[in-house]
Image 1: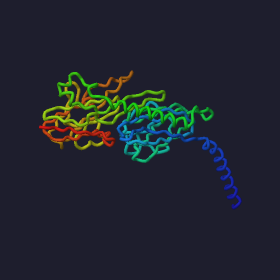
Image 2 (image 1 turned 135 degrees about the vertical axis):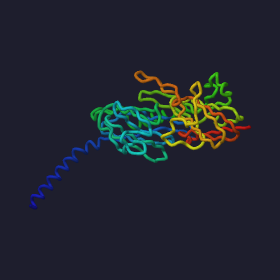
Image 3 (image 1 turned 60 degrees about the horizontal axis):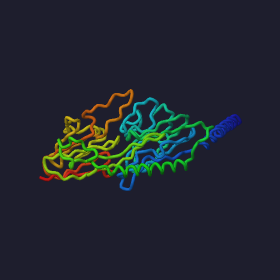
Image 4 (image 1 turned 60 degrees about the vertical axis):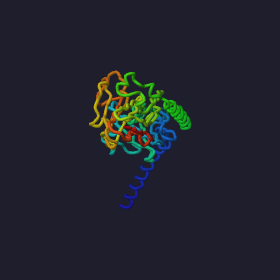
Length: 351
């Protein structure tokens, strides 16, 4: 019996050794690549909403680790082929709370959603995905519609066109270009966006631009240079006057929120005390600095695309928000999505 057990032990040991010998070459060949998610300037106002770089070639069995160096929220998300894009609060169906995230070191093969969940530099985390199958895969950020990238996964026998040092240089160049574009966009003046009929709701001096930016396209995807600030954030007006906020952003959402923030699941629509003007702008009346008013998301309507229904103007989509102030006081407001970046303001209402 002892000889039989010894024989079985040695047989098992040989099989394990053979398996290790077979797997070790693949493990030795697998590389881990590094990509940054977003970039920002010193005061966090200028944000590069981009994967840096936003195109990479790797081998099957390689992995990519994404780091999150900014205060702005981002996700690293690969959707299954044909999957409808979820919002950042939902993430992958069946994913973990609070936002449908999948575990670190998830495997992506184009047949199931993989999602980091919402992360910032405050989380102090990275997120790694393993790519065992060849193919060309689109990477998206669920927080920013025009923030995409492409991962090309090649067979092990095919040469790769670039090394990590090349991608680091490309990321540095993209980062510098995007933050430079954001700096240029910061000089937008409200008069450039004013509607000729604005005097129906107040004079142009009572106008605020809620964020500005531009979208840039590359072979790997799209990226956005954004300024997370209210332009002319502090206004001094008199009782009975109206202030109007518009956006010069192409895709980034902002809010104008007085009082407590709504919870994450109720940030998209406006509060119940917001109505819609004849031209589609949202409108609220405030009589006390303690009033709670939430504009909902203020953003440009999405671009129409073949095969998709045209987006309508209604109370659930708006590019303008107006607030009329009926009593004196100092009314503090913020964008609930970007107040941690410094996107705040105040309306000083005199008698």
